[in-house]
Image (tube, rainbow, N blue to C red; front, side, top):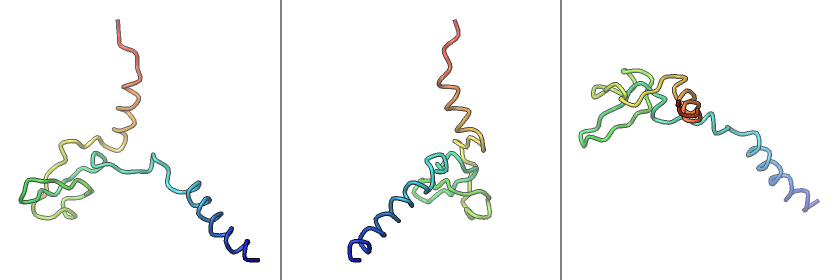
Length: 82
């Protein structure tokens, strides 16, 4: 019985890891259209609207759009033209 009590949390952790978020679900700053600009000049680019990022909001210069990351990844794999 004690062994079973030890094994169940381990199996739960393995299952959570196996069925958790995939790397493709991860979001990068290039996935968001707006950035909040701090007084120091630093940016935080995790906003989907100007209202979310507040009064010092700028357009994200690195924004790739909803399909941008996948398009760039496939473009890198193409052979150069001759």
